[in-house]
Picture 1 (cartoon, rainbow, N blue to C red):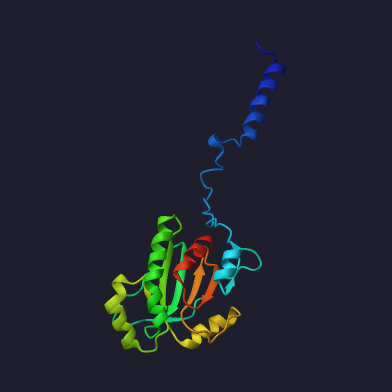
Picture 2: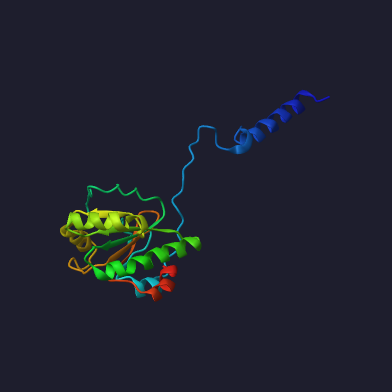
Length: 207
Protein backbone atom coordinates (compact mmCIF):
# COMPACT_ATOMS: atom_id res chain seq x y z
CA UNK A 1 0.00 0.00 0.00
CA UNK A 2 1.27 3.49 -0.89
CA UNK A 3 1.79 6.02 1.86
CA UNK A 4 0.55 9.59 1.36
CA UNK A 5 3.83 10.85 -0.12
CA UNK A 6 3.94 7.97 -2.62
CA UNK A 7 0.33 8.57 -3.67
CA UNK A 8 1.01 12.26 -4.32
CA UNK A 9 4.04 11.32 -6.44
CA UNK A 10 1.98 8.99 -8.65
CA UNK A 11 -0.67 11.68 -9.19
CA UNK A 12 2.01 14.19 -10.18
CA UNK A 13 3.56 11.83 -12.75
CA UNK A 14 0.16 11.13 -14.34
CA UNK A 15 -0.62 14.86 -14.52
CA UNK A 16 2.70 15.67 -16.18
CA UNK A 17 2.30 12.86 -18.72
CA UNK A 18 -1.20 14.06 -19.67
CA UNK A 19 0.00 17.66 -20.07
CA UNK A 20 2.92 16.59 -22.28
CA UNK A 21 0.53 14.83 -24.71
CA UNK A 22 -1.69 17.87 -25.00
CA UNK A 23 -4.40 16.24 -22.90
CA UNK A 24 -6.11 14.87 -26.06
CA UNK A 25 -6.11 11.51 -27.76
CA UNK A 26 -4.36 11.35 -31.11
CA UNK A 27 -2.61 14.71 -30.68
CA UNK A 28 -4.57 16.19 -33.61
CA UNK A 29 -4.66 19.72 -32.22
CA UNK A 30 -8.40 19.58 -31.51
CA UNK A 31 -11.48 18.97 -33.60
CA UNK A 32 -11.89 22.69 -34.26
CA UNK A 33 -8.59 23.09 -36.12
CA UNK A 34 -9.14 24.05 -39.77
CA UNK A 35 -7.24 22.14 -42.46
CA UNK A 36 -5.23 24.41 -44.74
CA UNK A 37 -4.81 23.22 -48.31
CA UNK A 38 -1.24 23.90 -49.44
CA UNK A 39 -0.45 25.49 -52.79
CA UNK A 40 0.64 23.04 -55.50
CA UNK A 41 4.32 22.14 -55.29
CA UNK A 42 5.83 22.80 -58.70
CA UNK A 43 9.09 21.46 -60.04
CA UNK A 44 11.72 24.13 -60.69
CA UNK A 45 11.80 25.43 -64.24
CA UNK A 46 14.70 24.25 -66.38
CA UNK A 47 16.21 27.66 -67.08
CA UNK A 48 18.24 26.46 -70.07
CA UNK A 49 15.08 25.11 -71.69
CA UNK A 50 13.20 28.30 -70.87
CA UNK A 51 15.98 30.43 -72.34
CA UNK A 52 15.89 28.53 -75.64
CA UNK A 53 12.09 28.53 -76.01
CA UNK A 54 10.75 31.60 -74.21
CA UNK A 55 11.31 35.21 -75.21
CA UNK A 56 10.97 35.92 -71.51
CA UNK A 57 10.53 33.68 -68.47
CA UNK A 58 9.86 34.15 -64.75
CA UNK A 59 10.32 32.04 -61.60
CA UNK A 60 7.29 30.52 -59.90
CA UNK A 61 8.03 32.14 -56.54
CA UNK A 62 10.14 34.79 -54.89
CA UNK A 63 10.77 38.42 -55.76
CA UNK A 64 10.80 37.80 -59.51
CA UNK A 65 7.48 35.93 -59.69
CA UNK A 66 4.71 37.54 -61.76
CA UNK A 67 0.95 36.94 -61.43
CA UNK A 68 -0.82 36.31 -64.72
CA UNK A 69 -2.85 39.44 -65.49
CA UNK A 70 -4.95 38.57 -68.51
CA UNK A 71 -6.13 41.14 -71.05
CA UNK A 72 -9.84 41.90 -70.91
CA UNK A 73 -12.17 39.52 -72.73
CA UNK A 74 -15.58 39.97 -74.33
CA UNK A 75 -18.47 37.65 -75.05
CA UNK A 76 -18.72 35.98 -78.42
CA UNK A 77 -22.46 35.90 -79.25
CA UNK A 78 -23.82 32.81 -80.90
CA UNK A 79 -21.36 30.43 -79.26
CA UNK A 80 -21.26 28.52 -76.01
CA UNK A 81 -19.35 30.27 -73.25
CA UNK A 82 -15.85 28.89 -72.70
CA UNK A 83 -15.51 26.96 -69.43
CA UNK A 84 -13.53 28.44 -66.58
CA UNK A 85 -9.97 27.10 -66.43
CA UNK A 86 -9.29 24.36 -63.89
CA UNK A 87 -6.33 24.23 -61.54
CA UNK A 88 -3.11 23.25 -63.28
CA UNK A 89 -0.86 24.55 -66.01
CA UNK A 90 -2.46 26.63 -68.77
CA UNK A 91 -1.12 27.28 -72.27
CA UNK A 92 -2.71 30.48 -73.55
CA UNK A 93 -2.41 30.84 -77.31
CA UNK A 94 -3.14 34.28 -78.80
CA UNK A 95 -4.20 33.72 -82.39
CA UNK A 96 -6.61 34.87 -85.13
CA UNK A 97 -8.56 33.24 -87.94
CA UNK A 98 -6.58 35.29 -90.49
CA UNK A 99 -3.21 34.15 -89.08
CA UNK A 100 -2.03 31.19 -91.19
CA UNK A 101 0.83 30.13 -88.85
CA UNK A 102 -1.65 30.21 -85.95
CA UNK A 103 -3.97 27.77 -87.68
CA UNK A 104 -1.12 25.54 -88.83
CA UNK A 105 0.24 25.03 -85.31
CA UNK A 106 -3.09 24.26 -83.61
CA UNK A 107 -2.97 20.49 -84.30
CA UNK A 108 0.55 20.49 -82.87
CA UNK A 109 -0.64 22.17 -79.66
CA UNK A 110 -3.40 19.58 -79.30
CA UNK A 111 -0.89 16.76 -79.86
CA UNK A 112 1.50 18.19 -77.26
CA UNK A 113 -1.29 18.60 -74.70
CA UNK A 114 -2.29 14.95 -75.13
CA UNK A 115 1.33 13.78 -74.87
CA UNK A 116 2.04 15.85 -71.77
CA UNK A 117 -1.13 14.58 -70.13
CA UNK A 118 -0.03 11.02 -70.84
CA UNK A 119 3.28 11.74 -69.12
CA UNK A 120 1.56 13.02 -66.00
CA UNK A 121 2.12 16.71 -66.78
CA UNK A 122 -1.31 17.91 -67.97
CA UNK A 123 -1.67 21.34 -69.52
CA UNK A 124 -4.90 23.02 -70.68
CA UNK A 125 -4.75 24.76 -74.06
CA UNK A 126 -6.82 27.95 -74.37
CA UNK A 127 -7.29 29.78 -77.68
CA UNK A 128 -7.57 33.54 -77.13
CA UNK A 129 -8.65 35.11 -80.40
CA UNK A 130 -7.47 38.54 -81.56
CA UNK A 131 -10.03 38.69 -84.37
CA UNK A 132 -11.88 41.95 -84.90
CA UNK A 133 -14.50 40.42 -87.22
CA UNK A 134 -17.07 38.80 -84.97
CA UNK A 135 -18.78 36.98 -87.83
CA UNK A 136 -15.61 35.27 -89.05
CA UNK A 137 -14.61 34.19 -85.56
CA UNK A 138 -18.09 32.87 -84.76
CA UNK A 139 -18.15 30.92 -88.03
CA UNK A 140 -14.73 29.40 -87.26
CA UNK A 141 -15.87 28.34 -83.80
CA UNK A 142 -19.06 26.75 -85.14
CA UNK A 143 -17.05 24.80 -87.70
CA UNK A 144 -13.97 23.89 -85.66
CA UNK A 145 -14.80 24.49 -82.00
CA UNK A 146 -15.69 20.88 -81.21
CA UNK A 147 -12.30 19.61 -82.41
CA UNK A 148 -10.14 22.61 -81.51
CA UNK A 149 -7.12 22.28 -79.22
CA UNK A 150 -9.02 24.07 -76.45
CA UNK A 151 -11.84 26.49 -75.64
CA UNK A 152 -11.97 29.76 -77.58
CA UNK A 153 -12.00 33.13 -75.83
CA UNK A 154 -12.23 36.54 -77.46
CA UNK A 155 -9.84 39.30 -76.41
CA UNK A 156 -11.49 42.69 -76.06
CA UNK A 157 -9.11 44.52 -78.39
CA UNK A 158 -5.60 44.63 -79.80
CA UNK A 159 -4.93 47.50 -77.40
CA UNK A 160 -5.79 45.24 -74.44
CA UNK A 161 -3.17 42.67 -75.47
CA UNK A 162 -0.62 45.40 -76.25
CA UNK A 163 -1.08 46.83 -72.75
CA UNK A 164 -0.47 43.40 -71.21
CA UNK A 165 2.70 42.89 -73.26
CA UNK A 166 3.98 46.36 -72.39
CA UNK A 167 3.60 45.67 -68.67
CA UNK A 168 5.67 42.52 -69.14
CA UNK A 169 8.43 44.41 -70.93
CA UNK A 170 7.62 42.79 -74.27
CA UNK A 171 7.00 44.23 -77.73
CA UNK A 172 3.40 45.52 -77.74
CA UNK A 173 3.30 45.24 -81.54
CA UNK A 174 4.50 41.64 -81.73
CA UNK A 175 3.00 39.46 -84.46
CA UNK A 176 0.77 36.49 -83.76
CA UNK A 177 0.89 33.81 -82.59
CA UNK A 178 1.94 34.54 -79.01
CA UNK A 179 2.09 31.88 -76.31
CA UNK A 180 1.87 32.34 -72.53
CA UNK A 181 2.45 29.51 -70.04
CA UNK A 182 0.80 29.95 -66.64
CA UNK A 183 1.46 27.54 -63.76
CA UNK A 184 -0.99 25.99 -61.31
CA UNK A 185 -0.50 28.85 -58.85
CA UNK A 186 -1.49 31.48 -61.43
CA UNK A 187 2.08 32.65 -62.02
CA UNK A 188 3.21 33.59 -65.53
CA UNK A 189 6.25 31.44 -66.31
CA UNK A 190 6.99 31.89 -70.01
CA UNK A 191 6.02 34.00 -73.03
CA UNK A 192 7.01 33.01 -76.54
CA UNK A 193 6.49 35.37 -79.46
CA UNK A 194 5.99 33.49 -82.72
CA UNK A 195 4.93 30.03 -83.85
CA UNK A 196 6.21 26.75 -82.48
CA UNK A 197 7.90 23.83 -84.23
CA UNK A 198 7.47 20.08 -83.88
CA UNK A 199 11.03 19.73 -82.58
CA UNK A 200 10.24 22.11 -79.68
CA UNK A 201 8.46 19.34 -77.77
CA UNK A 202 11.59 18.08 -76.03
CA UNK A 203 12.23 21.59 -74.74
CA UNK A 204 8.61 22.04 -73.66
CA UNK A 205 8.79 18.89 -71.54
CA UNK A 206 11.68 20.38 -69.56
CA UNK A 207 10.08 23.75 -68.84
